[in-house]
Length: 270
DNA sequence: CGGGGCTCCTGTGCGC
DNA sequence: TGCGCACAGGAGCCCC
Image (cartoon, rainbow, N blue to C red; front, side, top):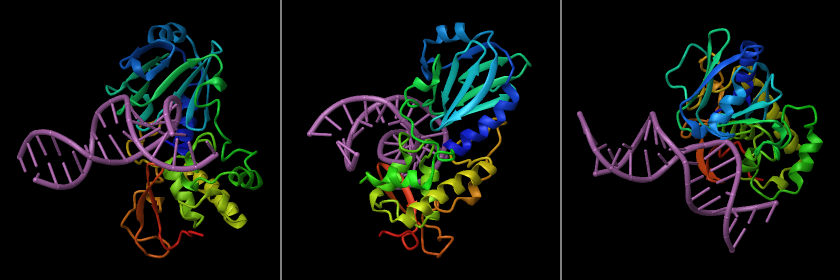
């Protein structure tokens, strides 16, 4: 599942290879992935335009086009954007001026593509919270953000209107590093724990970016290669295995309807 | 605000 | 060996 580090990896890869390339044509095999405008309309507006740049907001990838419009893409669970040769699994294929292809693969068809004039107004982005690796995300801001919230900290970390780009993997990993039980009410964290969680979040995201993401589920980068962070995951998907810190078995529970792994000994409940 | 539930979809992995 | 079914999961949406 692509989260912030995976989307950032794809962004960095694509920036190098699609910038200044013209979109000669687009082939849409699964029209329902396009949320706006209608597929025919999108084709008309995108054909002949040039990719100017690529950036990321939360888990969204945003391509700026020479027309001044933006192509906004969310990979959801199984989306991939792979640059290179033609891929028969591709749901939406961009034919580029260098003779290469940008393939949007998506096994489970949850992905979303939009062509918009103002990317900031896109549903999902409009109410997006602060970027956890951004300059304005500080320990004191984090303290304030958590203060009013009685809900469980792990589902809160995954709320995109709270923090941008954190999903099930990195929420679990950062709480493990910070030694905080995922079910703790957010407003009950001690000041020291808030600081711990703040640095754990930033550290885990940065390390994951440096390792080019985690290839959990179907994730592949823009070159079609796996990420390298899988082997550094300490709790995610490790239920039943020994805790890397204390050796006790990692436990899996459901929180906010999502599977959650943690160490019942290391991660403090109070 | 909080909490629960439903929805989209399909490959995987289980039970029998 | 093979069939069929429950399940996972991001995020919007609904309801109370």
